[in-house]
Length: 468
Ligand SMILES: [Zn+2]
Image (cartoon, rainbow, N blue to C red; front, side, top):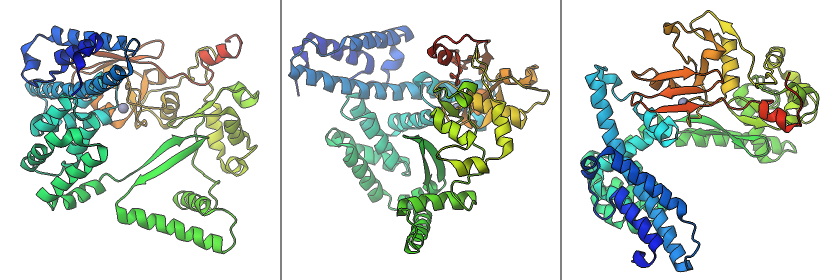
């Protein structure tokens, strides 16, 4: 054990760590013993203290000690977040129960509040709430290791994940067995040891786990460098292997017949061809929505275009898709005229960068209005969520007399839309397009509209072309 008292900076760090996270004497009761103010003040002081740390004036030995303490601090903070989360969840559920929320809906909007506080997506926050519950209620040894900074949040997550299918008493047994050994384990050993214990305690759990995992099958799309994308599928192993083998077979046959493409290229083309039903991979019939400025489209301006839900695309690439020049001639020929007509209506206003408004008297957003919203917001508007948009939502509910128009609309993911409908959530849209969300706990968060191609910043950068 190193001597952390050797330097005043480290002593300061350590004292802040002890004050905030209870290292050395983990004591869950401490969270209720002191007043609300002193705990958050202490955390603010800790943040200020950490901000002073830059390693200057330390010798290298102390720099390494500083690195270790900072690492421990992150773990201790994660443990404290777990304890606080469990307290928050219990209190929120008590409150909802008292308000008469039906049993089935208890806890709705809870992860969303945690997500906002942690500046993370509701999807990840739901996992963090599960992690917190498991650590605090079933895995005290792992929580202690985390609190002391002897393991990381990710390793604690691995222990929880690998024991997720076990009954509570088995999980506690794994915790008792592994807890004190966690400081010696890296990521791989933590995962392997937790899995080994779990398999030994309940050999049938793996089978049940496989069944549960199959329900989690999905397809996802992520941007990749160089205007490429990564389409991936999480599949049960038999289906994954079968799909891959079918593509391999197609590639081998094509190459045996003299196809000059590489095996990888044939497999990729074949995947697109079979999924979209097109004879050629480039003939993708699905409309690709592009948001770009008129000057970028017609005058060769460099302002990147945006594909809603995907991200920026270099202007020359976007132009080649629209005009049918350059690398992508087949795609432009196959693109439907409907898609192009719609594309032309999506010009941004040059002065504000806002998309043009449309209005409807219907309760639901009609398809075109919905598409405009998706193009404008691109990703779920809940701060830090950034999941793909699934719902066109009224910021102020239609039932409260608010109109169905773009100015009162926002794109939300399914989870955020459900959270927003839980009691106590209030959303307000402001003239500048920002949306303020107030949670049932009275916390307020703001989401600004994302900058669109040709928004004010883009025009300023091009050297003072006056907004019209
Ligand atoms: Zn969302």
